[in-house]
Image (tube, rainbow, N blue to C red):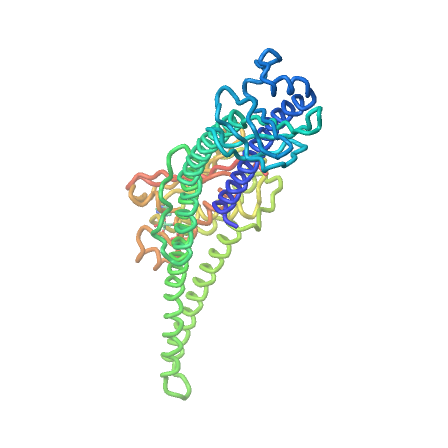
Amino acid sequence: MTLRRRLVVAVAALAVVLLVAGVSILLVQRAFLMGRLDAQLAGLAANPRALLLASQRAPAAGAGSLSDVYVGRMGSAGRLTTVLAPDTDPDLVPDVARGESIPTPTGRGTVSGTTAQVRVLTVSLANGRAEAVIAVPTTSADIATRRLAATLTVVGLVVAAIVGLLLWWVDRLGLRPIAQMTEAADAITAGDTTRRVPPGRPGTEAARLGEALNTMIAASTATNERMRRFVADASHELRTPLTTLGGYAALHRSRPPGPLDDEGRADVDDAMRRIGDEAGRMRRLVDGLLDLTGLEGADGLDLGPVDLGPLLHDVASDLRVVAPDREVSLDAPDSFVVTADRDRVTQAVVGLTSNAVRHTPAGTPVSVRVLTRPGWVRVQVADSGPGVPAEHLPHLTERFYRVDRSRSSGSGGSGLGLAVVDAIARAHGGGLSVSSEPGRGSTFSLDLPVTPAS
Ligand SMILES: Nc1ncnc2c1ncn2[C@@H]1O[C@H](COP(=O)(O)OP(=O)(O)OP(=O)(O)O)[C@@H](O)[C@H]1O
Ligand SMILES: [Mg+2]
């Protein structure tokens, strides 16, 4: 059942309860008033002397207390003769049949007079030959009951109006926006990604919910778009080496059968070398993608104490071997222990140093430095190469981003290296930042917390 329907049912139930309560109050009040009149009648009936006197027109005998009472006398012939009529209605005659005996107070109409209803009772007079008919108009009780009914109706209508207003308010501020959100969410699920939840009235829960929903939709749309772009980019990157491999295979198939001469053998060797290069490129690409997926997923890090001193010393030594033409300087303490994933940190630093070698001209010096501040360590890899133009800096950590696509892809770069370094830094709770000045070199700073928050 929807919230709106539940609310309507609750209000309907409340209305029924109020109606029943109102009617009950009316009935109880009326029964009370009638009981009072009946008690008055019973009191008169219990005092036949007063009645007798009254019936003999003896106003002195309590006529004051009888001013609103009808007293009639029904002789043995059964005819009713008015003895005393209420001051307010002198013509009153209750509707009592000839010779009828009414032993208990009963409601009756009237045959004349302005009064409509009376409570009536007959009492045998002392001589036993006649009956006294005593009646009291119910007018005042009827008026009181009608007034109470009118008051209850007005109160009921006011309560109904207030409840109606409240319902309208709740519906406008709470339920209608939720219905609109549901509709928008359905539309988005059906594929309308441009659809957004209409903004609710500021300060209401519905408005906050709407904002949260819109933020969530935007985030989900962005994630989907990133995913789509990622798949498109990855496919595109993989297509180039695959095309090359396919080309060499086709070339080989088109070769005439028979033994190879020296030139043919050299061609095959060259083709095999290229195939190996392309396969290596694909492997690096796939490795990079797997690294990123692992770092962004729930695989986690293999944390332990890592001494950055010897680690960076080894990286610098390897670099000197791989690039003997470079001057590699290392400025790091002999020992500086952090809690980190050794393999991942090594991979990140190597990613930065290999970039410094790959993307700068031969002979360009490379320096590795360690800077510390409380709780943090910064590993800086700087070169004095051509640098990176400012407009490319914010994109360097994007997947497959290369400043000079043709040159970098020619040099085997996939554009995943810095994305992996950045992902490693983030997985540790740190980050990667770049500063570069075209013509003067670049500095990549890998920030790591000494102890990552778990
Ligand atoms: N030290 C540097 N000097 C100048 N440009 C750099 C430097 N390091 C990175 N770049 C630029 O940033 C781009 C992205 O680097 P990244 O490491 O992500 O990819 P890559 O080195 O091209 O490929 P790989 O995935 O093999 O590392 C490079 O293509 C290059 O254009
Ligand atoms: Mg790289």
